[in-house]
Length: 256
View 1 (tube, rainbow, N blue to C red):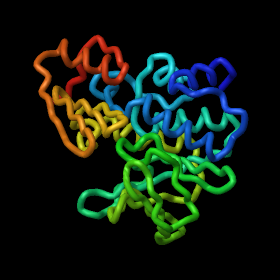
View 2 (spheres, one colour):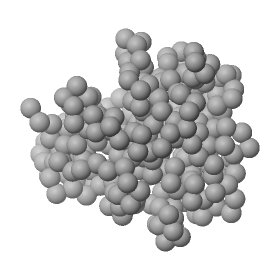
View 3 (cartoon, helix red, strand yellow):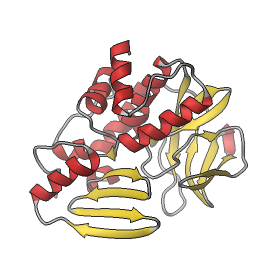
């Protein structure tokens, strides 16, 4: 990533170029990325290809001002952090299902950033932490999104908890972005993937979160949930623009 692309990426998330790769800088970049770049799966329902190539990620997230899901968001953020001098490793994770069982390997991509100590960085899980988590501590860690914890799991893995609920299990082995390609393809094409079964676009806000799913706009404000049904395609497209900064020519639709 050259200086022009670095500056464009930083402008996309409203950040200045840091003078040093420090924990405070990492924390600020993490939060600014979450606040600016939506978690969304619109490409799947617009018939757009999903590529994990570096140029394609930069084009989508920075030039076209879109979002993505974990492989894209954390993949692109890793490229930016490395260009800024951070030591970044890509980690595979298995996501816990609602019934408490684990999903498949490479179900999720998260980052380990070694900067003074090891940090778990994740801007690609939807509602999750606003700030990086200490990987080496099993103590509860307070975050604007709640209390989180990283605990030892079998085989050298780590379980990430939100409150008392396990969220995903991290493997310690560093991976390459291309390792996630097959699962990214499955997530974006299989009828068994939850990403193919619904449309979502979501961002945190100062008081909660805003999510657009189909024609349903859901806002959480200070813990209270408000749902609005949008009446037309024009209103849906205008909401993507006004609430998420995403310009679309057509409404994403789930194939039935």
